[in-house]
Image (cartoon, rainbow, N blue to C red; front, side):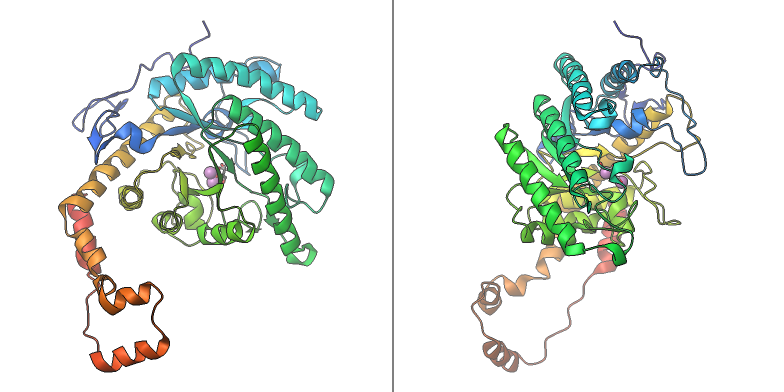
Length: 437
Ligand code: XLS
Ligand code: NI
Ligand code: NI
């Protein structure tokens, strides 16, 4: 029996909106059915290993403020095992069905590639036992190709081939780990795949290297039996000035150019969308409308600054708009909602990690309840789809099907005369959203 790391906390239960208990769900009721699915099935909530169990809340101006009771040995591999004990205690107490990790979150890097692979295999076998005992599953694995100094000029897009090979070794091991743990997706987030200065960069050449790297990772993954989605997580900047996977639209263009659309989808992070001057819902919709919405990294930025602040998502309006897109998409599976979010530097109690996740889960649960009402009890669909009814039959339909020439369109314009004005109904739609919030 391992040490208990959150001894003052019992299993978090659903108690309903009126409860005074801060360590209970007010809206997230995992077995409640909405639109034909339970909340658990809708969200497939996941915990991000890195923010919750590895990040001591340091920032560029100071060392961490959290001390981890599981960091109790001088041997980093032992500490990684204690960390795993703490993580699974947390997952089961919170009742989240999934988790996500980077290779280096789970196990420390060794001196050689062999050492690193061995460390990871060790921890993966322990994680596999825990998954069997608890039923908690792996939503996705990934490789950390941004922290080590060797990746300062990029990983797959590094101008030095030897660094590209190191990155490949790491991705191979991370794919092995993901498959061994029945991971349902595999993520690529290219934090350093971009550039700091165009003057020293051959941009297209680097992007082609990234394409080749991803094709080789895909081929290896399929060879070892990985059947899930590969996901690219867009982000416009930070830590590079200009990241190649800028936003959903850019990544979709890249996947098409590199012939990767059959195997890859997108993992959309709220704060990355806002860094790219989009709304969260916008980047979700760009991916969803093309059948490429793979998974979600749930968090929130801050209107007052331009960083990836990774706040926990507590904005109900944002969550509602996101859930409208997700419901219209028919859900998110085999992806899920991963809390790529961190508690603040001055949130130093162990239980703050519970408050943060409870708040995030409740916000999305409320967003789901509201989005379902907007879609099914209001005029939302009628207004949204009704706007396009002139394309539903007749000449409009013919146009959509690609059957009309420019000259024919001109003839119809002359026949029809000046088009009537049709309201976009924006204020009414905003009022409908607020009515159900
Ligand atoms: C950083 C990213 C990262 C990815 C996984 O901004 O969000 O956490 O999700 O590498
Ligand atoms: Ni992320
Ligand atoms: Ni991020």
